[in-house]
Image (cartoon, rainbow, N blue to C red):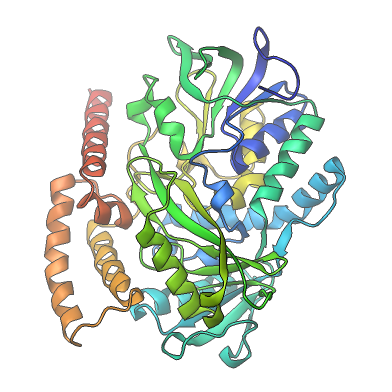
Length: 491
């Protein structure tokens, strides 16, 4: 059940619920500070995002025009920049505490390509935005002639037009990272409990522990919910739930592929973010294996099985846009992960609104990259110390964050919807995309108004809520509860 003896009857200082990259990093940091910490989660990590991740250690490659168009987005970017600076020391400390061994870094830098797939309003604009932010923050990068790109051999119709290399944005093997984190945690005296939490135990406004699926209870002075997309199940057992943005899943499929020629790139190769997702990316994993990632589909519930259409789409994109002979390679493993997505699109980090309750999730695609920074910052808050980073905008108990106007969100939905068609190689008369846009725009605006007269969800949630009744219901109920709560506070 656990690595350090039975937990029954023991009371811990801190119980961390969730054993992905965020939960592990926090548990380790707290244990280093002398806290008695229990880490809770099933060993095979069902529904986790970390185990299926490419584990890119960078933030500039994730920049979009939408991200830097709001104060909240820029705050998130600056947290990512600070996290990037922490990774060398973080990995060195893990090596020292666990005896090191093989390096878990898998990629030397990141190469961004702008190829002929996609549309100018997204791909060209995001490529330019990434360059602009690299310049703004004085992050080194250099242009690469597309003809000189290492390992790239795309089909002619998908060839890269421009490229640049960011030497400071690497990648790690997430499975090896989590093994090392867990080893450091238990070596430092932490307790691992390999059970599933089903409810948070509370006495009025005080959280006292959790109930496990096997019927046992674990007590602690502080409880941190860091269970990714599944955190919502636990929040639903608490009265504070309606005051916190709901969590849904960014379900994604990735694949590990043994290349037919035994080669792999030296760096991350990726496109800008597009089509409601994180862009196509290929990463080396050693011994002729590469990681292909990743799809992103908003789901009202976490998933653990890949849909065939997502896998086929991913594999077709990889061999067409990056390297043609991937088509002759062998798929070693299909992976499914669930990114935790709050319905307003921003993280849930900090005081959970009840004594002893902390929340650390909603990080979407950035959780693993942010883990050293957020572990440090959440530790400071839990121990009552002065924090350093600006997490206040992302306090969990909040009204819905509205980072963009409804008009901008609708435009994003229209452009990303069209981009899906081009990325899937649709064949339509040249003028039809304009006609489709003209019909999509009023339909999307009308749907936004049906969801709520005031609040508008992020583009990918607005887009998929038209197709997923459960998601539309979650949004409507959350906005109604937020409005009712604001009215009660005003009275």
